[in-house]
Amino acid sequence: MGSLPVVLRIIGNSWKPFKETYVCNRYGALRNPAFEPSRAFAAEAHIGNKLEYDLLWKQAQQDPIAFWEDAARNITWFSKWKKTLVWKEPYAQWFVGATTNAAYNCLDRHLKQGLGKKTAILWEGEDGSSTETSYESLFEQVCQLANALEHKMGLKAGDTAAIYMPLIPEAIVAMLACARIGVTHSVIFAGFSGNAIKDRVNDAESKVILTADVGYRRGQEVELLKTVDSVIDQMPSVSHVVVLRRKGTTLLGPKHLDWKDLLKDQSKNHFAQPFDAEHPLFLLYTSGTTGKPKGIVHSTGGYLVGVSATAKWIFDLKPNDRFWCTADIGWITGHSYVVYGLLAHATTIVLYEGAPMHPHPGRFWEIIDKHRVSILYTAPTAIRAFMRAGNEHLQKYQLSSLRLLGSVGEPINPEAWMWYHQEVGKSRCPIVDTWWQTETGCILISPLPGVIATKPGSATKPFLGIVADIVNEQGESCASNEGGYLVIKHPWPSMLRGIFKNPERYQESYWSRFPGMYFTGDGAHRDDKGYFWIKGRVDDVINVSGHRLGTMEVESALVSHPAVAEAAVVGKQDPVKGQALVAFVTPKLEQKIAVKALIQELKDHVVREIGRLPGPMRSS
Ligand code: PRX
Image (cartoon, rainbow, N blue to C red):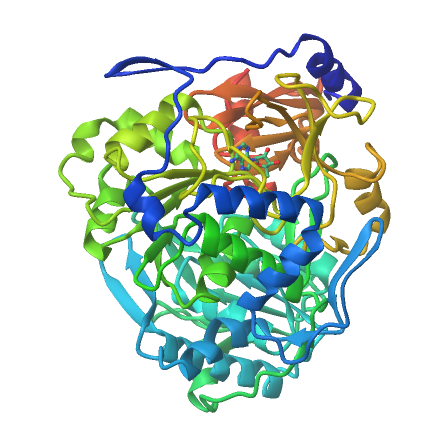
């Protein structure tokens, strides 16, 4: 369906980017609005002087390696690198020969600075209950689990473990415990089905699965353990399933180990060993243009440098910030800006386990007031849904603690941007529209809130040290306002190190279309002020509510149903989700089932095969 050449032709010939942005709101129509950083914000910002920034930006464009070498000072290294970058296209190695430990950077070093009592995680449940976890307590739990993984399960550096957990502090404990002992973690979003777990666990050959009996969403229990158990016999590499029992009644089977029992006997100390900067910190599966998700491999040292530098400067992080990134840890946003980028700066983070509008449409705003959130980082889909729900749900709350807003995952339409700015940010908070991908590890295009004037709908400029361009089909730089393909022309530290066990697909997906450049798969244009306007995917990947889905993945799921002869899936514009899936299905002739019932059956089948992610499809 929709093969790449066809899409390219559409982009190349008839796709005309808007030169003007008109934003209509209750204050009237604005033409090409731009919002300068306020003096007050700039005065307090890490980067707040435009002249200094311009100079720094130019230097970092000319010598990205020197910029990143400098940024590497955000990280504690156990031994220094011999070479900053070794680049043999398409493989990069950063900080070659250096050693570090990701968990040490997120925990131990803060304790050494006397920050043990500082709150690391403010967790909020859907029912309004909440907990606070200090850096000291997080450290102790991570050490206990790391000890248990090593001594009770025999895991060692180089092994892989899967994490299939709800958005609770223990999910972060699991990630950091793996990182601490050099076990590569593979977090599987808790909405995925048994089949999706099986494919990911088998591809990664994960030895252990860390899970919980249930999660909670929309007032319902989500049966995580049951989902794991439904495929446990088809995952031969798994020796143990560690279960966090949240309900007293959950019974354990032969491969199950009780989380709390395991930790009880373990020491609250653990020596963080040094790992090579290139040691794989995690695998994260994401959708591509084929039916099979790809295991994106991320390094330790370079990844930490990328996420810590961008977290600090793009979110202008300060010691007293309370940062709420609403993404699940099952996605890259959760990895980079819930866990590693934020904890590396000893930030207090907010975690919310539940649906955004449950039990009422003001739930987000209630959480912001309750926990005095200062930075909110969320997706345009959520913003549009709240906008639709009506301002009355938001007007009950002060939102006075907010000082910065972020957007991620999909293009934000100017109307949603303006609503976010005026209604949530009260025209006081800068908005950072951050463009990046699972593969890029960290944000690559975004405003720096103290120096870059923002324009609704534009992610503005490449981050320091990121050499981005927009090229035509021949790989030549496009002129201003000419639509083309977004590419990155110089390696950056947190770039993916490959696709797990699939070097051909790595080469083909990112490095073949334009030789010498990383192809993002996105279409974009740059205006005459050098601002980037990202239009979205130009391949067979659909972005539903900020989450990536390959059309082929859904097609494969559909044709695996016995009633289906052929299936084709396309994306369709959706006012809230950005894009929605539309499936065209040809049933087998001998089909006796009524059309309506078949449609429902196929929707359920896709959920069984892939998970809740695609959401209900339209019937066509
Ligand atoms: O199409 C772009 C879109 O999301 C894709 C990456 O998806 P994923 O790997 O799931 O990561 C999402 C979270 C980083 C990109 O190829 N995208 C992401 N952020 C933006 C965006 N599109 C426009 N504007 C953004 N700010």
